[in-house]
Image (tube, rainbow, N blue to C red; front, side):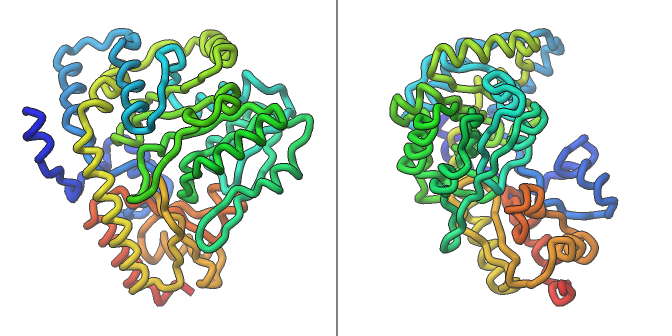
Length: 399
């Protein structure tokens, strides 16, 4: 298919794909957890859309060959990452700065292990994405929580609080940008202030940017790689195309590390634990995703934006006590239910037993998440509509 035809082709994100009985984490695992037939799951953060045809075709070519040997990283793998960062994020990245690692959760754990000692402190903003938090805990380091400030429906970093909790034992700051679960996209000014804080206290800065390609209309994402050199010299950015093109099951990510000494120490840890080769499908995803799937990506962003509009309108009409906060990034909505005046346990019971819908309750992201739910809107609109109609039918029973 020629590029012009692909460009003009309308991609069907309305297709409801049956994902059960495929060992699917979003559907089969949640079915096992809740043991409720026909439940709709809007919690786990992957999309219910078919991945781009170009990636599927590349996988099919591999399957047709029928040989699944060890795989190395190709020149095209590196060049596509570099070109995507240049085109989408105005970041110049050298090949040497790219360090393969299968998952960002693994990257964060490797960096905590490599650059801190047992019982050293690592700062994380809360509410926090669980695996980033656990990367500290499971390496026997101490998490220093710095709660985000909620003002006028949007979150801010509390820099005064950061200064009050940092100590001589603090060695690292883990930042989620865009932030999961609250959906903030940090501005350049905020990121530079984080960088200045890290420089002042000699902290390594690890930034999870896996959602960096997925921002709301009118919002600009700034990668930490474009910050001042004083930030870059202590910076590790972890990112991937798995959220961008919905291939999380392929298991591929990479760190981008400007400083040679930091990069060398990470490489030594990766070499020690023997994590060298990607899967054969991981390389193909990067080779074909970034440079061939622009139209899918563009239409996906538009569809998610439309899903947000649909969700806000439905909730405003049927669930006025739910307050949907501003979504700047990710395809996840962070929703307050404070006006309902009920506990998290009561609300979860209503979702599961009455509405037959599952979402992520806010306490999954720590105590600062209580009073909120996280809702994934990267699904066919008909699926969202059915879930919301189930909720509306039993809304009177919520208390």
